[in-house]
Amino acid sequence: MSQQTSEEQAFEVWIDHELCTGDGICAQYAPEVFELDVDGIAYVKDEDDELLQAPRATTRVPLDLLRDVADSAKECPGECIHVRRVEDAVEVWGPDAQND
Image (cartoon, rainbow, N blue to C red):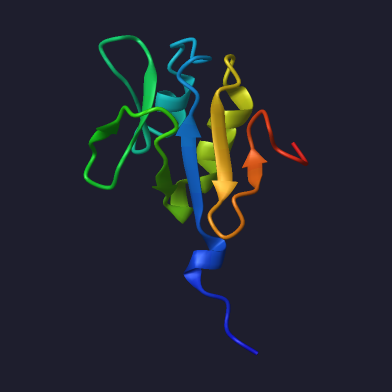
């Protein structure tokens, strides 16, 4: 039997910019992961704090911020935040989550 790797516990997040209402709730919950740009839309940031502006750009969620990122997905009025497991790409929080 193999040990579980950190990859199996990894999560990533992306924002559907078409649905973003620019409320900034995500940036309030997890400013290390989300930021509003000058266009009023929220974006995810990479590990170097750079905004990822490409459609469906994803970033890893640090495990210590997972609860904050999950809360931002739950509270987002635009329902545009998608959090999924890296291992199998199953959405665990967000509009397409199976057990939200």
